[in-house]
Image (tube, rainbow, N blue to C red; front, top):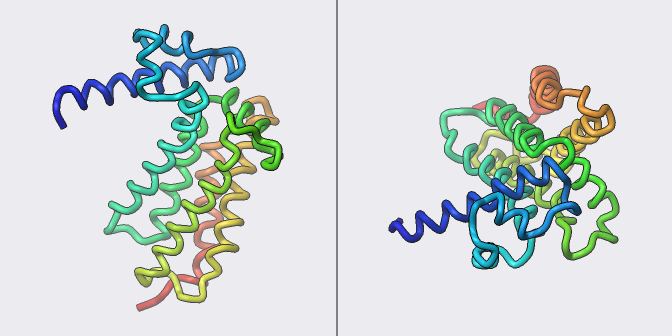
Length: 202
């Protein structure tokens, strides 16, 4: 990667970081492109080199970190799926918490009815998360860690429901419910219980 490409990535990172900080502080509807570029310390026109609209930054915030989790799991060749899943759960919730409860509330409000989500919002995040986790479990079946008859679709639904339930409890408790703490408890109590019958014994 040359200096120009490195500088471009750094500028994009600054814009995303500034956007996230403003979202945490003010919420989506209270900020605009100029607010983001001012906080990032770049010219307003620079924003449009990387994004078409402020919603694109929100999309990056809600997708990119979660995609990185799947990449991390792929590199954990020395771990079993039972060992990988707690890492996935913890990192998932870590990404949620790092965005802040106001961003979580905003996103939850926006996507409760996916049929009415406008083009300016990310109405497909649930599907994105579902397909990512489903892919992780399918890989475990393909590489022989899980039995071929493992009900991947069902297990994905169960796990995603748990993760999204924690997000909702966090919002509804006004931050008193600690998602990361409960994620750890969930992993300690449920991972083996859910998957032990599907582990392939060689």
